[in-house]
Length: 165
Image 1 (tube, rainbow, N blue to C red):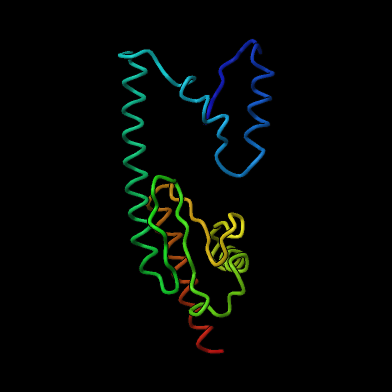
Image 2 (image 1 turned 135 degrees about the horizontal axis):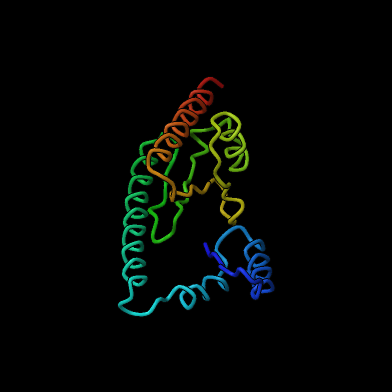
């Protein structure tokens, strides 16, 4: 995130340019990310520097905890194999078509999951990987737990549907 405080409109062009850059792709924008350290580097020893360091420590710990929680929780779901996250705020999860046989592909998986359980994930096709989906784990753990319970219910139901065919 980036917030510009510009009450007199001096940075209107910059604001418009940044806004356009953030809407080009779904994902991290490396140009904006490259500028952020310069924008967010307070003077050494200042209260802003201390506050930023504390916030960073808390945020990184939260992400590490959520990554571990996500991997452990999704590893226990029938038909799923999450890839251990390594520094991202998301995890790629492989679904096993031999277990979830009534699922045509990862787009079908994500559409049915959204329709049946109101859980939104991105299909692996978006990233050139078949039979995978992406879960972002930057939210609160109680929200993640609810989503993972729903994903588990979905997979159990579809594994059962595959047996019934």
